[in-house]
Image (cartoon, rainbow, N blue to C red):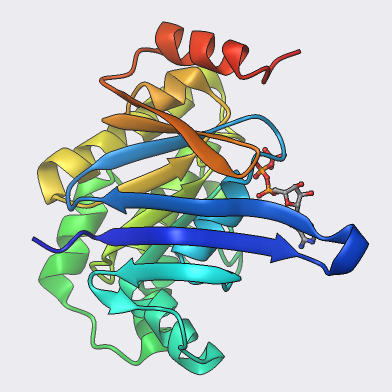
Length: 243
Ligand SMILES: Nc1ncnc2c1ncn2[C@@H]1O[C@H](COP(=O)(O)OP(=O)(O)OP(=O)(O)O)[C@@H](O)[C@H]1O
């Protein structure tokens, strides 16, 4: 079966000459459909660069990124924009909702941008799965942080993307709310077969994933299956993440 996302020998160098920074060094990783992966590593280890390259938000200096079998290398910016809108979902730390739009209009925004018809049965299912029934007419400011992140997750799911990328999706939430959102992401994987790849600094968040990838100095240095927060914290300490 085709992987949802696959990176082969992806390198990313920022800048040129003396000031060049190698943010990723020949990174290879495959994300099978219906898997939940956390990406961790010390500050500056390349996590954001990894996520951006995997999502088609940034172009690698070399190597191959395939999204559901489609090679991203060589695509122009217009094609990448279409691909990101239709085949990738994003959940950010800061929710990134449009404050003037209702919950329902925020959730369906990617479809309208892509000119795709709203499948009302699917929309109802997504809204139900994320627990937003009865709140679809609210504005983001009328919701709690956890509810706003649920809107962002629904918006990420509505196009039935190949993969949902999370960039510190629980970074702005209190501990209890973060757990609810992580439980939801887990359900999205287990109940809907969605693939989720999430960058996080939090070992508890990482413990909700099936696998944790550890980055250090632009390389994947370890992978941990069936992670616990204790084991993840210990591995991060050995990477010198919390000096
Ligand atoms: N646009 C850029 N221009 C130049 N250097 C960059 C750029 N983006 C990232 N870098 C450098 O690439 C390296 C990896 O950065 P990246 O943001 O991917 O790390 P990170 O693990 O996400 O860090 P953090 O946990 O602090 O967010 C760092 O040395 C960073 O300074």
